[in-house]
Length: 249
Image (cartoon, rainbow, N blue to C red; front, side, top):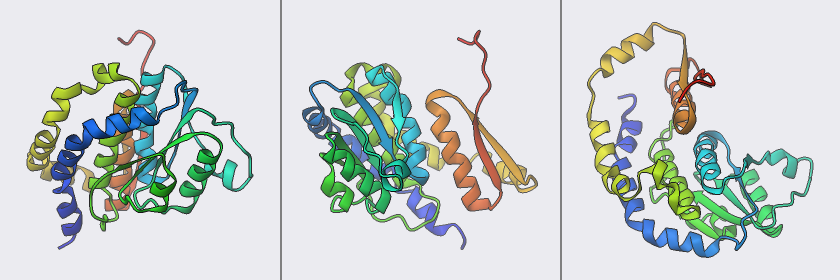
């Protein structure tokens, strides 16, 4: 039956997130111990679904550090061989396998240039993990379905944990202890709620394109939702920021 693999992996999300919640105190201490005494800035390096997670991380880290957070263009380092000054920077490298050559290469060069590299991956024994000062492991088996689900939500939880480690006051936006404690059960409830699902499928079936709108901390979800629709429907779906005005609250 089509979709069996992805449905099976989606169902693993509450368990994956519960493990991350349980590891949160230890990981927070480890991250805080590794950060530079004077954090000059933060950068992100990722591709594909991990790049959408990196968008979420950028919002959170900008809120945490109060400075612009950049997404590194890997080609600047790997193709054009430009050395970047990342001394006392936090560099977050995201790769589901931990083996994407350009992500590992860029992260390694950033570490050699004085950055604190935090790797976010599925594999604690991967090349990315080996060159990272701290590795945040999603804690799931290899994802077989093309539309990644359990890895993406695990990565989202881990970059949220990371941002909280950088700035404890970020719980104003993340919900803090109460939200973390409820996370696995809430995700399980969402997965179990199939109301309106058939109607949504019928609505999408007759339309060749789709636009996913979001703003701020939900923008990464729109980007990933559009990618998932492309992967599963083979139709054109794009994400864009919802329009706003200067009078919005």
